[in-house]
Length: 212
Image 1: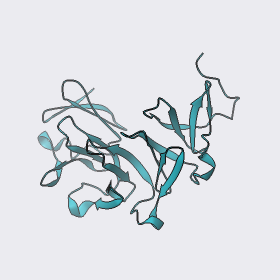
Image 2: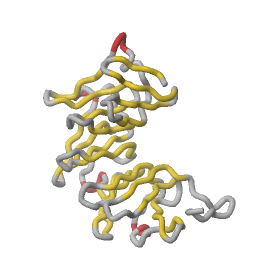
Image 3: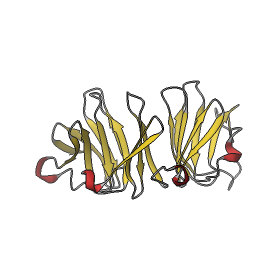
Image 4: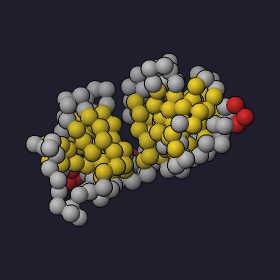
């Protein structure tokens, strides 16, 4: 097969996977930080020793070839084989990272555990929380739609970042506001939004939330 199977007890728990522009494949793990696929095996990348974060739950291949990592100690950026860290000591207002997304303008959007939504743009940070309109300060999913609008899945429902600010979405009969722990967001070719949480998979068609 294409992968080598590690001996029992040696296989790390894989939490996330992403590919960078050069075709390299990276996975975030529960206890071993980040691994990369090399010669059909998962091995630590050269910069892994300086990561300092063994739990990496989110990985994202950036628009310019960079690799973004989200763990329990902030976010990490790998460019040209060099690792950069952004955490509280650097003024970054978040630690336990739950979601990463990059918009068409190159801004990085970060979802944090009780840290709300954080925008990283040209080295500057801006946070959005309940006071800005989010249903909850724990953000589990972030994604940009085909129109360039940002959608945010939280512990207590769904929101959309519109030009006028954050808009919590209720849906028909409060269906969306009742949807808890939204962990994944993606669009299909028909323009429908697909969402998942512990209750299962859902499709948002217009204002109608349809269970799958």
